[in-house]
Length: 233
Image 1: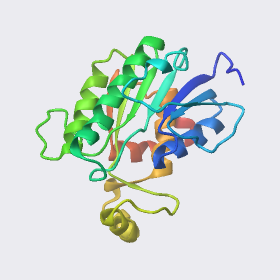
Image 2 (image 1 turned 180 degrees about the horizontal axis):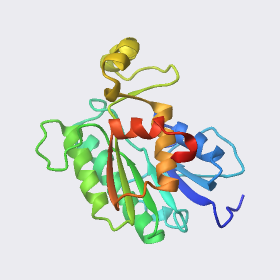
Image 3 (image 1 turned 90 degrees about the vertical axis):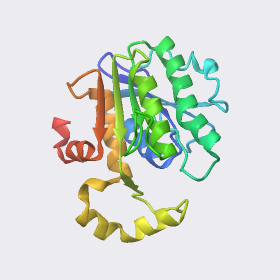
């Protein structure tokens, strides 16, 4: 399907992950999106006339993606890994190096594209945090802010609640899922549903917010957008 002049071309990286999979499905149904390029290591398991799926194994070198990334209007980058699931060096490589390399090729291929980055609550651009995840997300944010994109959105969700049952990656996530009903009531600004986060990322990437070139969206900001009527987003 070829997008009309009013529709957007959107790239989603990490479309098989929890947030990325929702973003893919929402983008395919979005009236302002005319075409979606999903980039990942394995098929997303979705067929749709708007979808162009590109399999790519080595995110340390995204040069081969230059053609697929040409002429894109926005990118939603959801590629990531859970803290503790890989060694520290691998965590940094996935969180920082892969993000920077993809952004390099996207910027060269589509210099006017918007970049929406799935960061995380507590991301620390100063690099002083004791938590490796926070330092690395902050480092990636700094690189994206300096990459030259006309608009960059850093999404910093707190606990992301899986809207559909899944096998949780560790005990902490199993516990959070179990206590989510009470946690959501007691700490509403510390949770966000995965599907709500995905929809917000797509809406913001496609339509913008009317604010500055680089915008950090904390969990409370994401929740505020979710609460808006659809026509106002």
